[in-house]
Length: 231
Ligand code: GRF
Image 1 (cartoon, helix red, strand yellow):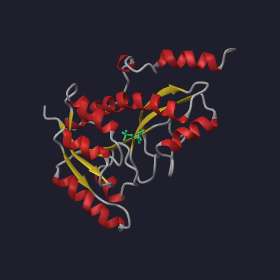
Image 2: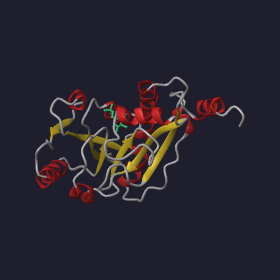
Image 3: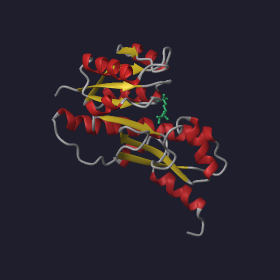
Image 4: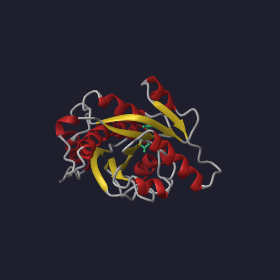
């Protein structure tokens, strides 16, 4: 079966892009054929070229949304992509791009949406808010992208404990390890069905795929029993 050609959109360092690229070897249901960034010099573009994939910059700053939208659509069409994965892309996706790829455009968010999401809730801001709120559980969410920030239908979530003494940095690192497992697993699941023009059934995370990141259910239970000793 031919792997589904996909684009990854990234503004930053691109560790999730890397996880998606690395996973292609194990589950060949998709292939990243284009990496698109809004920023010259984004680390994600270096990862694309190291992997021999095309990279392209579509600047957003100071431009009319219609122009950005047209340029994005042209780039995605000419690369022949059939799905789009956002991986740390900090711009709102123009409505015409959402419409063209509806239910074929995903994002990963480093918290359990709908908590700690929305405009301005990205990167470190998310983990700072999580620690400030004193919540005991955070996590990663993969969701479809719609016309607003972080409001699309949720596809998959995985919880991550927040421990006493955690800082935004320690939480961010723990969540990021889960993102690198969750995103490729969800991408593979959906792409397998999209390849066959099927509507994907719900994603069911195989617990064992999280064994390599020590933040799975067992760890969560330990953390919850520490948080609520009387329970
Ligand atoms: C990740 O935490 C992701 O959830 C969020 O942006 C961050 C991107 O990190 N959307 P990286 O560039 O993939 O390392």
